[in-house]
Image 1 (cartoon, rainbow, N blue to C red):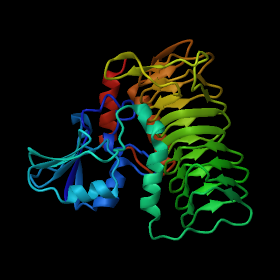
Image 2 (cartoon, helix red, strand yellow):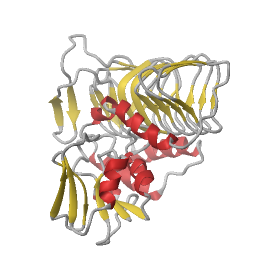
Image 3 (cartoon, rainbow, N blue to C red):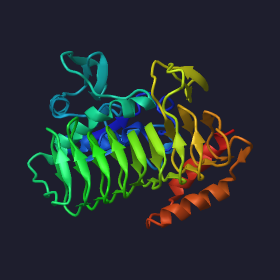
Length: 379
């Protein structure tokens, strides 16, 4: 099987997280949307139908034999089974949403008695993350045996706690009453941490001493987190290692939060939130009450940074200074509430390279082209 993941015309609707990646590369649950489908379908190869400026890093596979899957849909065993039976030029539509098609997809196979797990807006990621964690948890732990929790820890709850090989958990409290707890390979939960499920941390992630984490929360690969966190998804390689609150948020890759950065996730009026839309290019009214921060890749905050409810931060922004900055902070912003300027591309690439090299990863020419493209569009 050859698969192409389609952005489904949601590139700007899911920005800033999708400014640097296709929709299917978003972490939702324990795995990215693409990774879940990979485990279910085991395709021979896969590609992406995404924006032109992303296509060098995320190319498509041009063949009539490929199956196109909507990259914003979370896969499960039943959907995978239906996709495997698609014949030439058939499409799979579930509850009026296109899930997959083979060839032209002119002949529609309709399924209506199934709830789909999918995202259309950035806040869908954290709002539906509990269900996504449970989906991936079942997939990743099926037929496997957990490593035992040592006697220094305390655990309660009806849901499962699964510890992968190489993970370290000491003197922690794990509450699986509302959902499972998953600790990935070589990850570490340090002493004094208190965690409520649904909760997932991926390989080589770390929860710092004394952290308080409420589910549904996902700590992506190689992330380090501490302080108080509630219903947040960290994509990968990002750090919130110090005290400070972050709730109802999604954080991209290679982000860093200075000590005592705090984000509001609820207005004092308890009203419905207006959030910046990249698609509409303006603040738009939503029906949600809770939202903290939507942050693109390579963005950072200085110490004691205060962020308004429903703040949207673009790519490679550096936020610092006194007071609350604007609720929309464009890509490559350097500064805060008092003043700001456009971050020079050369300096932004230097900072990104330096952070990535600390993890022995290089900023590739394709990455640089993506950032250069976004820099031209900024401000």
